[in-house]
Length: 183
Length: 227
Image (cartoon, rainbow over all chains, first blue to last red; front, side, top):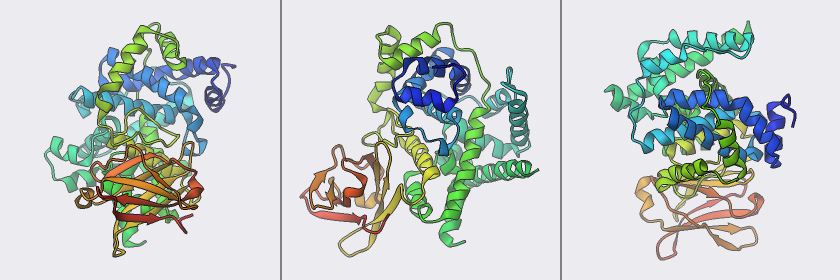
């Protein structure tokens, strides 16, 4: 399997049981996968376990990937996030404070390409521009998998308010990303 | 937009992030399966949720990670891998019945959040031929929950009933178009929800019956006309 193969080709190779494709897949995605696990868990050993588990799940279920549902990187990062949240809940660990996590989001030491950097920077700016309470709800939901009810408890607010904050944050990001895409 | 559309859009962000409750998801899915406008809205929000994950700063894993991950993936023995298995095998991590198999994000854990995530993946591809949601009805014909079916590799189904109906249901079976009854192995409602693999071909399913401890049919969902 050529290391220059597309992400989809690597997944197809994994689905066919090709170990070379698996090696290339790990090499390509290990930094974002480990980075996400580390950001959620704030523990390198636990993040390594989670990253490994994420790759095992990707290997087992590569055949189920459907490109219509999003990019390969999003697929494997969703698996990673779920595995990280499982560990958070198993350990009954307190999640990192949303403000701390948000600060981590605001830095990207090694962007892959200029285009990627610009896109990520734009999204970061949109998140930073959200009202604080919406931003906190978004971070708790998106990265820590906290439900609206859990957010209402953590933030000491009514359930309806938590749901409103999540909805408002997601809608605002969606609208502004789409406005940008149209220009 | 209908009242149903308004209700779905109120929780579309939570659905996209994979944090909506079981009942909310079931209601929304039933609507979205037949509403292209809400489906598009959910797809857009799902794309935002995906982008959020990509924002996480990349980080170099510890030396040797690649080798250990490969060992775990392709099944060669590795002390670290064995440790991992134990870690993730802990009390089934609150498994909501059997693991949901979407063929997209089949994971060893199927707690509420994972179910939601899998729903979201399924919804993104739902086009009427691959996804169907039909009502579960009691003997009087009243709607008491829903049955969702997804055609994939493998295909899966999700049963959702109101919590007050859960105690009257002990097991479930699928009835094929030829009339054969097949029990759903591992069926156990939790918070009114159960999901698992479809034990027969998607197109062969005629109905799903939820049965009382005495074997009496309590709720039935018919798939005729659903796709």
